[in-house]
Amino acid sequence: MINYPKNRKTLPMRILGDGVLHSVTKEVTVEDDELRKFAEVMIETMYEKDGVGLAAPQVGVSLKMITLHVDLPVDEDGNLLRPLSPGEAVLCPKMPITVLNPRIVSFSEMKETKEEGCLSVPKVYAPVERPVNVVVAGKLLDGEEFCLECTGLLARAFQHEIDHLDGIVFVQKVKDPDFEKALPGFKKIIKKSGAKNYQIKRLV
Ligand SMILES: [Zn+2]
Image (tube, rainbow, N blue to C red):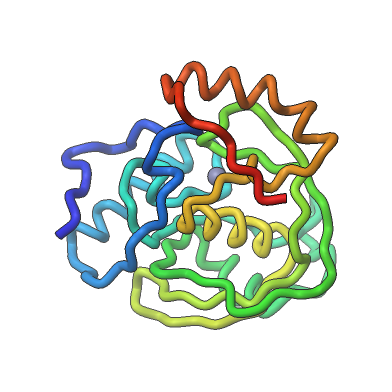
């Protein structure tokens, strides 16, 4: 039984140091109206904060559920910038999407480093190295299951949001010297969040 937040259009963001962000989430097993309503609130919250993605624990619900809005990689005239990955071709036209129990099935050896931010780490950005391509499996809220190779921002967004479901926040994956540079910003956020005893457990 999940206690979803009631009667809210959007939800306050949980901030770095909040226990729910640093805990492994539970699988979604019941797909009912409550879950669908919660998905709408997640999407509204993601749009309100101008986010590309949101994971349920970021709004205090410890479930394997994410929302995304990643557009097709196009130029100003709407022309595709490169051939699409199967994931982009299938999923980008459906945005925004809610994905239940998403998981990374495999990832490429090739990696790239790009700047990331997170609604739970407001206004502090830092580079994170991640595989360029990932195969992601999951179930859309309308019941459609998928297992698709993704690249570009979609691949990065999936990895960032699925990390949240494992209790991992991107700050844990920032390498030196970028970590040292961003640390004062992270510390300020932790101090504001009131999580005095939280210490960033680095994974790189
Ligand atoms: Zn995030």
